[in-house]
Image 1 (cartoon, rainbow, N blue to C red):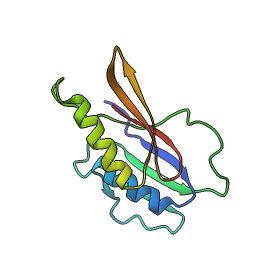
Image 2 (image 1 turned 135 degrees about the horizontal axis):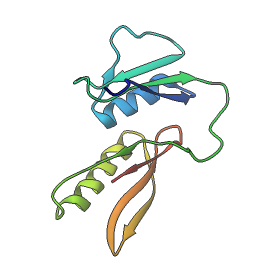
Image 3 (image 1 turned 180 degrees about the horizontal axis):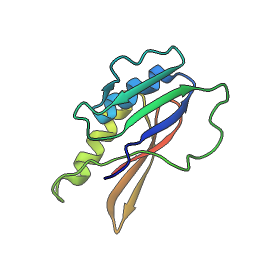
Length: 123
């Protein structure tokens, strides 16, 4: 049996960041978790790991060594459209597009920053 785990994230504004990621991933706030300096989101189906956000005093200074990738999967002919549509939705919710990565002339993924500048990809 696999070990249950939680992804822990530092944040300047944990509630704002939790709200962004809840929307991005289809998660919801963890029931009963109330902390002014922290927030937690969970998969409503109980399948994915919980993600916690804890307020820290220092800002982000370097590239993330670990990050979340969002898989916008679809039939091969629809993949590029779905990646672009997902990236546009996340940009409207506070993310920033950094760059597009192509492979053999096809869009592979879009690198983005969440509202606090943490890198993630839409692939």
